[in-house]
Image (cartoon, rainbow, N blue to C red; front, side, top):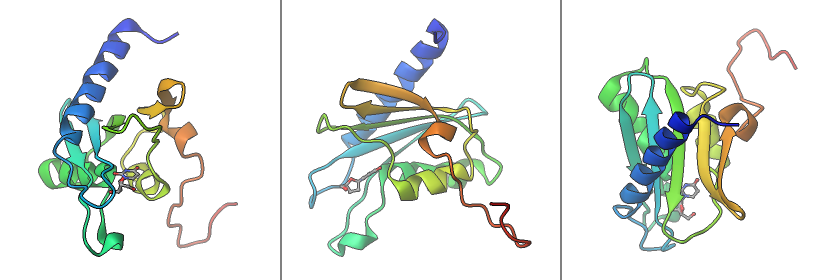
Length: 142
Ligand code: THU
């Protein structure tokens, strides 16, 4: 069973994600997403999806938050919790591209909170994204 204090912290992170979603730029999909990352240094960094008329250029909220976190706090950041929200009441775990980007900086046991069909779901990052691509010049070990 999860600890109450941890629950409250995740609720705050989810609230930050939801608030930021209102600032999303999503005129093409109307799917406004907000992400909030809690860093090991205690900071919370948010991001939103920013779409483009050239659809493929779109950046997701999670990656927008990530690049902002590195820009503001440097390359040594560690992410200890992730929250994702959207204004469409849709089930939406982070997309595959965002998982791979997050993997670089996210602790395997970091909780990931996201809207699911059955309500808000919390899963450790290692379960959300079990097979991380890592660059091993000597060859992968699988
Ligand atoms: N989107 C995100 O921001 N995060 C995700 O994890 C999945 C999708 C955005 C991209 C696009 O602007 C809109 O949602 C619809 O795909």
